[in-house]
Image 1: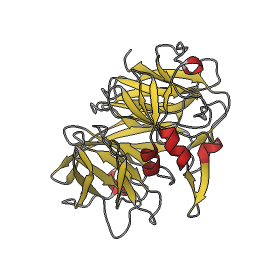
Image 2: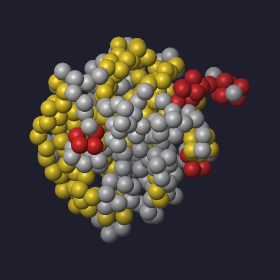
Image 3: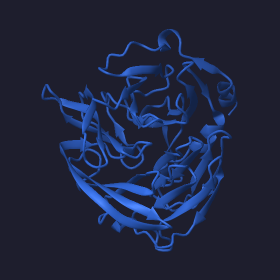
Image 4: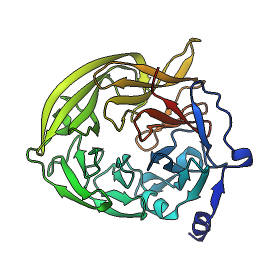
Length: 357
């Protein structure tokens, strides 16, 4: 722990070999270079969450295979956590956030729209979920459903916990909190129970976000959504959240031409009108390529933002590890806070690219 405390006091400057390099990705602008040794850049996603227009939280590991170790009979991750300022090109290690986030294989993590709270969803029923105060680096437990799909409200005042394969003793519900104080989160029963498995009429449905008008945006797949499987199409469903009830709205089917969808990569932007995902396609040279794609929630204006060659097929590490491949060119992607651009990591550099033609 002493080594961590010392590390947290050191501000890492992106200079010399770590300086921003010229972009070699068409249309993309490099923002900063991740510190040397904080990869592995070629072995799966590197998680990051924007907390403002110029600052983010970056989760890395220096250990192979994402730093796995056994904890309670399950593989957990030992993470390094940095606060990054893309304007000054500096990152500062945060021991407090490491202690709040690390050491457990969360099913997923969701940052609040205002960048102040981070919800960590558990993968089993023996451990509670968490909500982390990003500024204070403290956390409290939340009784979240395991493997649930948490969606924040646009004003950060609440989060909807939609469970798939739910516990028999509790249906989905939402948590109400003060936007400036994430640890105030308190559960509140829904006026009518939401059955996550029937929300989109099959268990592969995944809620991905809530628009400012209370519309829940959810997706389901025509095909197997597991890693490495071919997904033939995506269906976008919209549900109106009114007084604790879900009212079904319009749906649209989106053929995606046999892309191999990267499970968990689907993200709704902050304005609630565009969806982002990562997939493997057949490139222009006939070989596999990784790409980032976007489309409107109405099924219009499809765009392919980035296409990078992939030499070796991704290996599925299972529920706790995601992907691992020696030549994976994309290592995570997120919408920028304004919802108009996409940020992504490739070869140890964070880039941004506008979501426009």
